[in-house]
Length: 348
Image 1: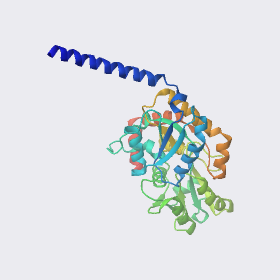
Image 2 (image 1 turned 90 degrees about the vertical axis):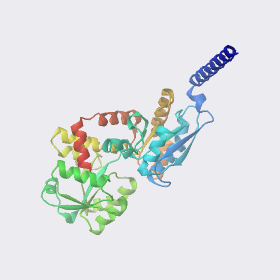
Image 3 (image 1 turned 135 degrees about the horizontal axis):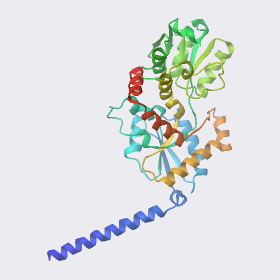
Image 4 (image 1 turned 90 degrees about the horizontal axis):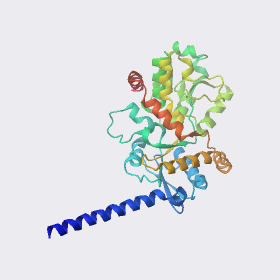
């Protein structure tokens, strides 16, 4: 009786194994087009509805399906919390890994573990996501009022000026501390303002001498460019890896430091600027679907209908590809320990 039961168990186990094997074979034999035909892709974003990240996501959801084999629909879903960590953790640990879920994170999420390696709330490895790309690369601007009396970069080392910021961890504050530590400037940060628009208003009112931005969206530039053209405000410097030719007289922070190590520190800090408003896939998505969705993203960034729609909505398009973002993060996280420690100290 016992032997019969044992044989029965072995037969059942074998049958289950064969079923699983054939099921896996069936899935793997599915083409990308077959998988996506009639499907719905969930695009989980960490930004709030109506915000900048949401705007880019909805533009992508509208136009990208035309370029995906099988032409699935894309539905945007907001998952706010913990400055993007909630969505990032979900995409890494919980979301379906078959290509039916995409993500849109805040640009600083890719660098979160770099700056805070012991933070237990960060449950993901940013280098293992399959980054699809970003529709925009950010360029931070260092603005100073004419009344501040800063006519050249060297003046920053001679005279203390104040700049507005929201919190100590914001790019406005971090970049100011880095300039003080690496360039020798005398920048005093006044924190507590609610976002970039409030920080700009503080500069406009004369409460502070300037403002250092983490990015310069269409809305941001539409507000500051009239001041720049009038001569009331000067673009002193760009906080970015790739300079914007719109400001030929404003060097990047990388340009003004001489030490190769200091240049690398700024390159690391500005990695998230290149990432802009990034989109990604969970780490377990099959390679053929990753390849297809990256190709679809790149094609969307060149799509005339997409570009016309973005222009109508005053959305800047300056894309970067997913493979470039993965390579950039690999480079950042493989930096020598002494450089990592130094930039973490400057960013505190």
